[in-house]
Length: 103
Image 1 (cartoon, helix red, strand yellow):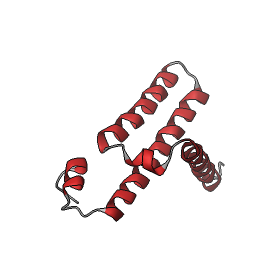
Image 2 (cartoon, helix red, strand yellow):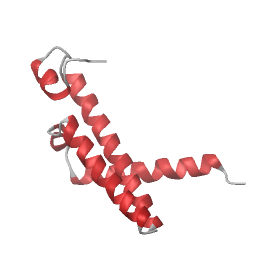
Image 3 (cartoon, one colour):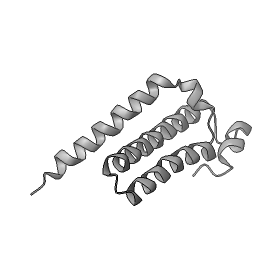
């Protein structure tokens, strides 16, 4: 029987390691320049690479692409939280970037 906790921990460790690689490469200021559409586009690129790898039966590239997509999702959440800490949902900058529904 597979130890699900060990599998989960390995996934989390891999995503966090990838996220650290991204942090080493890109600054918080850089990440803050992306809007929601750009973040979604970056994630879609990695998901697309995972689909291609799956079709090619390349399990290593498939998993690596999914880990990168997950790390980009974390980056998007981090960036969003930084923005939210700095501006109010009623500010023009928030509305321009995320729309007018703070929920």
